Length: 240
Ligand SMILES: Nc1ncnc2c1ncn2[C@@H]1O[C@H](COP(=O)(O)OP(=O)(O)O)[C@@H](O)[C@H]1O
Ligand SMILES: [Mg+2]
Image (cartoon, rainbow, N blue to C red; front, side, top):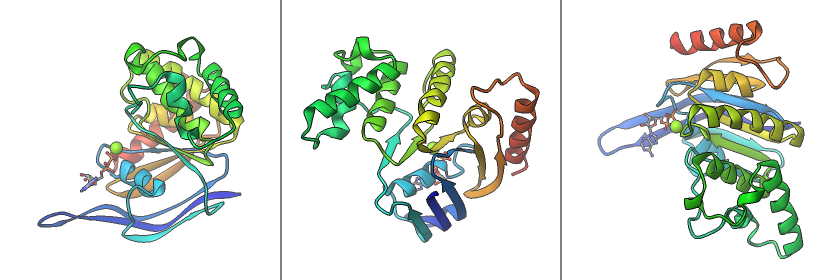
């Protein structure tokens, strides 16, 4: 089943004295349960694309179709954007504020606290936890919301290399069985190939190329197959 279709999407920002075209003729179909990574240089339009899909920004042209049409969308940004006055568990429960079944909320939050190894920190405040834990909390908040589609904009970009590698592994373990549709933006080619079943290469506001990654999870950057795909993706970015 198709979760998301982008037909000829374009975005032009009107600035004071000129126009800036951030996206040109973006065509993309994402199937339900697919893990799609979008990779490209800084400034190529990745964030703009995610913001359009999230409805945070209006498109200038083209069509954006969701299945179901009222699909719930979860967002994870580069910074965790937690509420400093709420504990880890209350931050995660934030998306369930309107849920009246408090037992269900408690169960859902506990489920994801366990999966994200945050159980011991459920009562801690954002100022008391590490950057990696804060980002896990942000992922947990998105999951508690139980979205149909999860959009992630360089969610691991601000983390140190070790925490980042650990969270890359966890993301795969977490999301693949859950069958979530994921659009994951990164400027890191290794990360794109480690996580995505499809890697979409963007450059200068356009989709330049797409690569299938038919490798089982968890993937190993030292494998020859991984290296070959990584090289192709890198070349696609460099030839822009
Ligand atoms: N709100 C905005 N107003 C004007 N220009 C913007 C705005 N957001 C992004 N841009 C421009 O659109 C282009 C794409 O930016 P962005 O989507 O943030 O790229 P990326 O996420 O790939 O680094 C850049 O040239 C950026 O300066
Ligand atoms: Mg960006």
